Length: 390
Image (cartoon, rainbow, N blue to C red; front, side, top):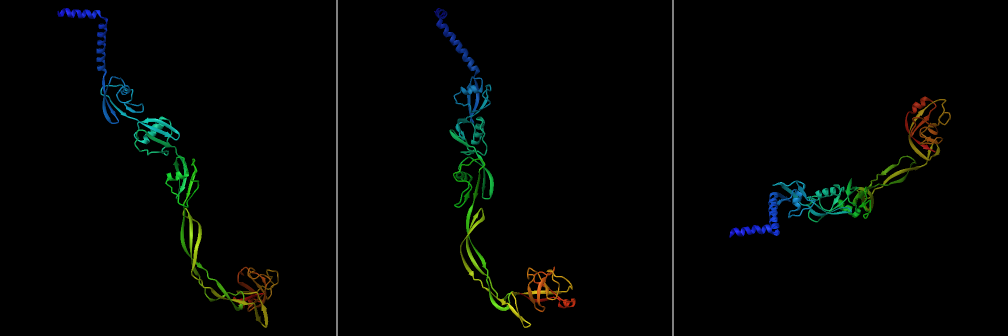
């Protein structure tokens, strides 16, 4: 009975095309399944430090990742590279990228980056998009901050400017902005009276020079002397002779309250707010000669002023004076800056004379008297005399 049933089954298979296809499909499925299991390999995958194992039948790392249950992006860092052939037990490290918005001035890119910090992201993205970004360029967040998903990274390219403030002149790099905003960025606070070289609403351009002048005021009290005045009293002695002190004067003192205006520590203006006399000065009283005539030998001699002079004597028989006159008694040599040539004078102890000569040694209050003989000249010697100039 069993033999009959088995025989009928084989007959049915041989005679039914459907049955033949079913058997062939089964065989192919069996072979494919065996091949699949033969080609399956396990990869030790690490994603952002988290270890995971995946099984794949694909030949390269990139294909294995793309057909895994995880989502990967072209910006992700894969080590070894995506075209590495898969072998059993292969270790693959993946650093996932995060979506960010990267902008440099007016250029904006919606992209992804695997960088950990903002600074690393800027370097990586600038290279990717062929944009030059310098260390002095401004960024809206700290370069050391950790990159997060959907972060906005904004770079503003800096321009060079010269800053002259608080005794220091230096070059600074700052993104274009108004002077007012630049002062805040640079940490410079203006006082109520401080001056700046550019208007606060001026938009900075490369190589602008920003001068900040610190203006301050201070109040000082200064003490100064009040010079004494000299008061002359008429006295009965020849005019021109030195005054005689009757009572000595003394300076007074005054205090002034002043407001000083300083620019960068240097005084540029001062204003007197008030002053007072601390000590009044004492006038000096002198007697001053008023006499313009003298009586000698029964004659009255009128003069304009008198001098105390050092008088010497000389004798050069047959000589000629500086004015061309022949020497004789009554001619004296003078300094023309004191007694003009041609003036008539009266010399105590010598008599009436005329200033007609000069001498190399006759300077200032000195005169040289002509004598008729050397003996008289030597006898005269050197004397202090009164000279009355008419």
